[in-house]
Image (cartoon, rainbow, N blue to C red; front, side, top):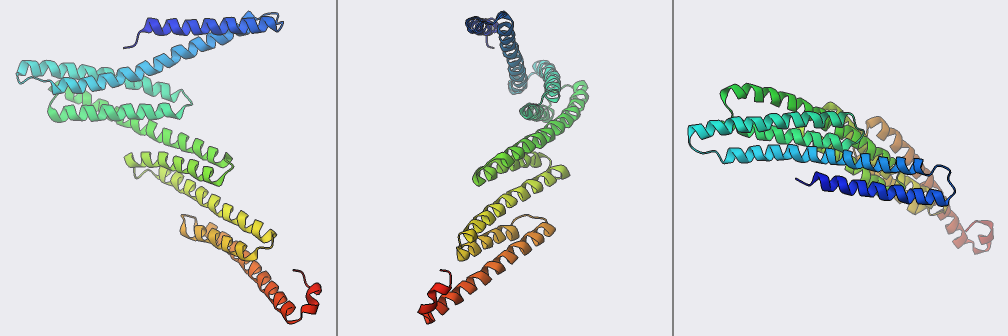
Length: 307
């Protein structure tokens, strides 16, 4: 366990250094009350340091309880008296772990950080694995089994809540980030990270309808990014008069539209628009070829036609 006194000493020293540094800068700038913003900044640093330590130590203590409970079960002796003592000791450890999980769950629900929900879900998963192993090995006394089963039901509910909340919030944040990206590759990479989050939740809850719908929506976003990229390149080529290159790029866009996960109505409308553009460019390309052929047949009329 890390030293609480040492940590607090370092945090206080940093807060004091920040206080005097800001105070000196504000005094140099002619501020009438330099101690007020300096004290406020130092207080914020100290509060953040204390809150961070509380969260980190809570997670570490919960993991310690779970791991130590497993170690205690692995060291059971063959005597009945020693086995009964270890049963009660292991059960007490898991009761403490259950209380710590409840605190972690409440902290995640009151925070806006998605990763706290993931940590809570992971702690629930560790608890369920540990208690299930203890039940299989007979590590609990008869009177403790009912309490452990009830705890498992509660933890399963908490794990589902936190894992689904994390997947929803994290995927939404990554999707918004992908929409704000400039480069196409960055958009796709960030959106794929959102899909990875949803896939982790789907591994535990493969029949969850909300997860499937979210995954489909992100896949459609990725397809729209790819199609928009190739359509933009095609429009640039057409503007420069490179009709054949523009047609090829429109066909690339059509390929992604027809081979990726897209709603039928969206695919139909998008494909129809792209095919009209291809037909228009093909007509322009044929007209240009006829003009070139006429120029070859009558070189004197070259000035009558655009190059």
